[in-house]
Image (tube, rainbow, N blue to C red; front, top):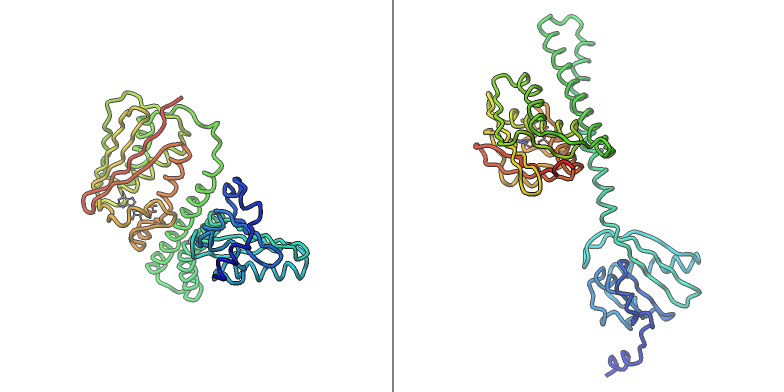
Length: 349
Ligand code: ADP
């Protein structure tokens, strides 16, 4: 049996039997001078999605793997220029993801392939790109509208007063929309650098009362009921950003309800933290949308949100704030019945 004989003659590199080799997160493959795989750790096996016994002793060029073919191409460049070579590789087999490969070789004595999982790094880069593209898109729409109307004013200076008023109203409305979006984007950026020395005991009841005074003039006829048995509900937070989060939820409750909105806030002391629930009896949210609700720029109905001056940033600001305060937020909703956002926050220190 030639294959058995072949396997019998093969001696794995001593590194292969070292117990630490499988504890490394990076994938590692060692080739001997003939190009045979003489060591492979657990991480490499999972990136390649091939069993270790199949790899060991095999000529690297014989293994049917796009990742190893990529490594061999890098090895040739590495040997040609006599220096390590690095490249990226998108894996869709085994441990799926984005890998950084480094290939090292020494005077044709052998070679070492290293695989580092860069998927989370790549994800952050992609999220950054998505963010810029979404933000640009949201800003481009009002700019296009303003530009169109401003050009009309330029080209037709003899417009009636009535038309002038319609056009200027549209320009002003879109300027407000842009201003609001830029303010939200700056708030999101600022939240990344909130210093914890601003944290202090904050009374949720007083904060909700503060929000009531900011909310009700904007939504005439709306009602806000505060339900609690507590006299004081102290949490450990930055009062400004916590107020912003609660106000955002209340404004959404009013925005996505038929006027006059009926809102309530429940505050309850739990065993380990304080609970605050903002509830409305508005249009509700379809179940399939709930998973995406806190994503940046997500809106259930883009046209409806735009009409109300929203761009899908509000809830991502709320979630970022609650996470900064070491709290949690969840949502429950039923279409045509209403929505409830539940926040848990740590007690005041
Ligand atoms: P927007 O600025 O569009 O309101 P948000 O991030 O605040 O953005 O909300 C995201 C989406 O979630 C909204 O477009 C809306 O469809 C939905 N939503 C948020 N709050 C409520 C609510 N209380 N009732 C119904 N839908 C809501």
